[in-house]
Image (cartoon, rainbow, N blue to C red):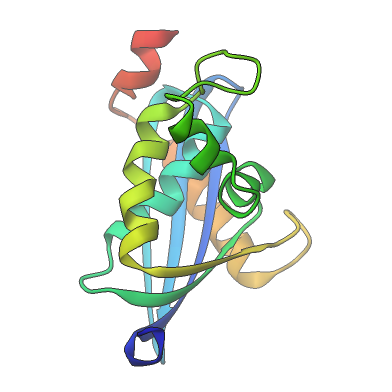
Length: 160
């Protein structure tokens, strides 16, 4: 029952310095008056991977099922879930309508069970439009992408 679930508001963003290039993700979790920031980065990745990973990391940080309003500036993430692309890809053995392998399958497969655990409503926010929480996530993601000693995004590097 979603009425008994704890409400949480999440903002996410991904960033890539070049595409591909060093990348980062940023998350802002808000529950009542409590705010928590998370971020991370990789030495070589893509912007889309960081956008998906931000959602994965945000939902993974929740310790119990929640009612989530997840705000993203990624139409790719929002549309994959809201327009049913994700479900279709899964049914088709992770192939697109053109019978090509779905990009970022490893991350989509991590996101799927999280979407089933939580009651998630996705909201699209226009990037770089002055929205304070989205701008904060963008700062977190860019800062993470600029970090030194970033780890490998091994799934991406295997395919690249």
